[in-house]
Length: 112
Image 1: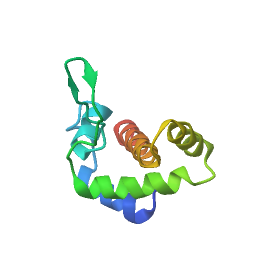
Image 2: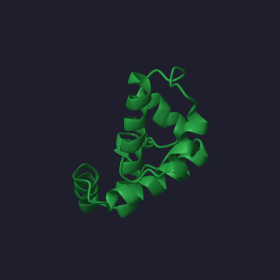
Image 3: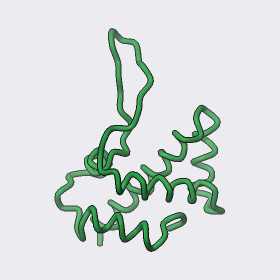
Image 4: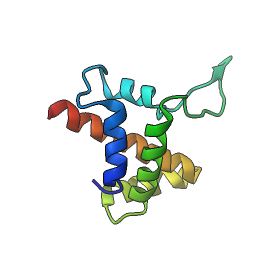
C-alpha cells in the first residue's frame, strides 16, 4: 500500500492487534483511532468540525502515511487528495487519506 512503511504498519498493528474483532465496523475503528471527523451543529447551523480524540500513535502514523500516499504516484490516493484539497484545506485532505488507509487496513484484517 502506498505511503505505509514497515514502521507505520508495525505501529498500527501493535495498537490494533492481530484481529479487528473488537470493532464492529470500520467506522467504529476510525472513531477509536481518532480519525473520524467530528460534527458540531447548533440550532441547525453547522460549525467547523475537527478530529475526535483517539489513539495518538495510530493518528500520527496514519497522518504521515496519508501525507506520503497523497503525494505518491498511486492514482487512487493522489486523485482523492486533489479532489478534496480543491474544496478546502490541504490538511483535511491528508486526514481524509489517512482515514481511507485505515478503512483499507480494517478490510484487510477482517477478511484475512
